[in-house]
Length: 334
Image 1 (cartoon, rainbow, N blue to C red):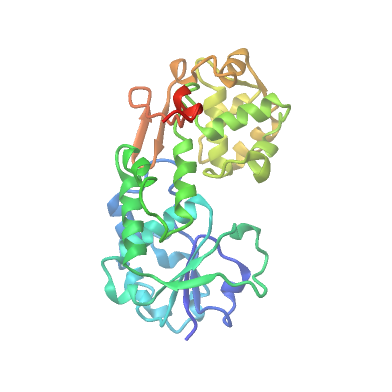
Image 2 (cartoon, rainbow, N blue to C red):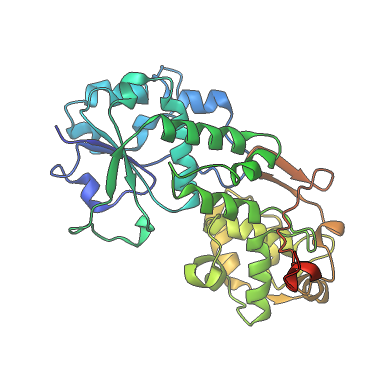
């Protein structure tokens, strides 16, 4: 029997009956906003009951489900559904949300030994969004062992914690069982406000690009290599830009004023408003970019980082530092 694929990004081959029976390809976005509650996560992965609305259960996001002989099992929990396959392949790539989804699912599967026996971990050291087809390329595939499960559980519990301390502590531990996880943790930590500017890496990168003349949101939102940061998606970049432009002391000028009042769920009207914008830095924005001003001292901060609610009164910072050697060690003195 062809395998079941769990993935953060579906590609055409996954919908081919020659490659896999089914692919579950839609999970949560864990990099932005408040994390789903434990009850919401349990409902999504658990057995479907009559009161579960459309779009709130894993079975609502399965390619070709109606063509599978397991279609009548769609109301099972995900773990129970997986047990009807000889193999369940985990295709989660280098993207931060993919790795967060991976550790969440592995933490969930720890309670289902029969399902764990079916799991195959695929090491995908590239961004699947760039793949139009697999061709002859195949990732390294290994069995899921206790080491992967323990590492995933530690990472998921750390990310859910009410402070970032546990995530930082993970950097000092052996994460080799999930080799793509450490870079993601570092990228996530870099999105905490800097102690010198009060802004995270993505916000600072936007200021840098605007200062260099990139005045259109298309470049800021879509040019992956130009952006360099990878935690957030297109609309999330827009929400960060709103914060930079519409606070009491704005760092960015030229963002369309209609965005002040448009509901964030109104993507149809928000999109053209972003396209109409012509951005530049304010004098304050230039000072923040030069590390001469702290954005958070003049503007409200209210966003989530995993389980941490970042506010002006609860502002965790990220400030990596390289310490120079002492004069004694520089001279080779023992």
